[in-house]
Length: 194
Image 1: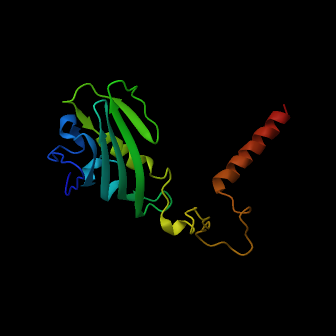
Image 2: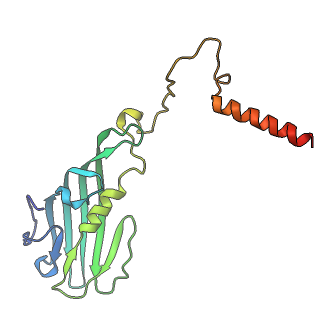
C-alpha cells in the first residue's frame, strides 16, 4: 500500500497493513504522511482505481487522535448513456477523530470513532474508500456528452429503417395490433347486440 512516505515533525512506522495505524506509533502533536493508493483500496465491483494519492494529517494528544486526509484519485467509470469507459478525477477531504468518549457518528465531512487504549489500531481504510465512492456521480456520463460546465447535453433520437414518403409514424401499425383492434370491435358489437 505504501510506496512513499514523507513525515514532518515525527516518524511513524509505515510497515503497517493498508491504512491501519497503531496509536502508540503515531507521535504526539502534528505529523503528516503521504501515501500512494493501490487498487485494493476499492473493492471488486466498485469502479477501478487507476491511480491515487492521499495526504494524511495526524494530530495526537493524550485524549484523542485526529486524522484528516486529502485524496486525489483517478477512477475508471462506465458511462450510463453509452457504456463507454472513461477516466474520472476525484478530489476530496475527510476527518476522522478517535477518542475514548466518542459517540460513533459520521457525516459527509467527518466521523467520530471510539478507541479504548493506546495499543489499539486505528483503521481508516473504509473511510478512504467511502470518501472516494461518495465523490462519484450518481449517474456517470462520459465527458463527450457534457457541456463545458459538466451538465449533460440533450441527445438526438435516432430512427433506424426507412419510411415510405406517404407513410407517417401514425399510419404504421403492427399487424398484431390491427388484429386485436378487429377482435375488440367484434366483441363490442356482439355485447351491444345482446
